[in-house]
Length: 177
Image (cartoon, rainbow, N blue to C red; front, side, top):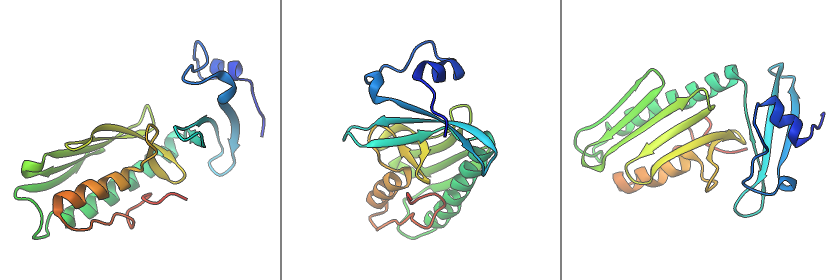
């Protein structure tokens, strides 16, 4: 693995200056060659709020499309079955089109989950917790600011709404490695 300086990486990704969310010595930017996808990637390694190292890496366009599509399709299948249950709120509905998954739960509000290809993120808008942007890390979708996985948040919020234990662990990319 070749290691490049922070300023070299910033030039590669066309940043004007290094990120300033933490002292430069805390940031590790690593240039890696992914032989599986034959794609070069830049990984951003930073300290999280508990001072544990977290790896957030950009994945190739092809890998992002595959992973995000599998994630959204898997969630769609699960949620379609979920809204058919007797415990589902009145006027519940699920739709998935053009990479946008919408879960309408009547008076409980509407969830919108969509992929953001330029950022290689999945965005979630929740009527309970608000908007969040998820990055793919450790084989699941993680919100960098609190370290909570998207599926974990959905399980908690949907369990509260449906007043039953909702388990999304069988959905694609729901469990971290």
